[in-house]
Image: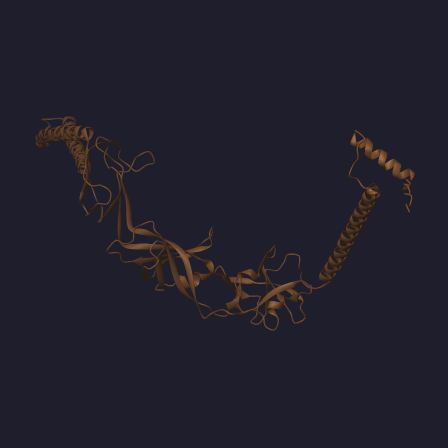
Length: 440
């Protein structure tokens, strides 16, 4: 028995027809495609889900940001309400002895700039820089043709003056004898007028003779002066030392004198012993003014070299411009290890009596002068004026205004004023920093 086949009926909704027609149009030839029915709805659903997720994420981030800003503002208000934190140190007595190191410079024991004493030109120079010379040693020779000519003329004038004296002497002798004959003649032979005339002639001849002799002395003095100047044709060393500069060469014209327009010939220095100059601050002047105060000298280029000396002399007066005291130390220098012009460091041992030590970071420099901020037991800031006795760089010695045991604030902000309450930082809780542990 044959069962008849039933024809399958395909029912298509209008939307399915529209989707199919659209797919066929996009395909171009109207051929079959792989797009399944309902793909458009799925795409719309996916896009809506992504948009919802983005909106949720934005809302979440924005909410967290507002929450963080709120917490930060609350923390800021709490911090502002809290007293500011400060570091403190306990003021202590300064050490009984302290090393004060000051810059210094070396200088020659004697130093001279040698100028020409006569005008001329350099015939020869005999020593150069670095040469050691002795007192009286010839350094250079100067030719002086003009001076030589003046000396010859002066000697000739002297000879003429001496000859004039002989002539005046003869006239004076003749006038004297003539007057004596007329004076001794009997009365009535010669008149009184003639006798007085001969007397005046004799006196005049004597005066002329005296004038001629005086001229001889003047001419002799001129000859002696020019002769002495010729001795300066040989430039000689005034003392033992070392030539540190030579400013001349063969044929150079030189002019006598030491004015600003004349050039020096040599510079001569005596380096044994040698001087060390130090400018000490006013706070240390009272101790460094004493002769015999020990000192240690070191060179920056040879830190292992240590020279010991003592204060030899001081200016005994404070320089009003720099407020410093000039101190000199004399050092033997037989091997000439030290030369003039060196930078050195000079250390002195000074005594501290009744001084309080505090870090330099504790100082406040305001219009009224140096001050420090002291924190009392209630954490309140008290600003005190202080007097600085000595400044070592990292630490200062206070002469007045501070007491042992005071809690001194470090690096206090300029916004913190006297009477304001502060809080000691956690690093200082229980005990405050001592000076040995504090580095400003």
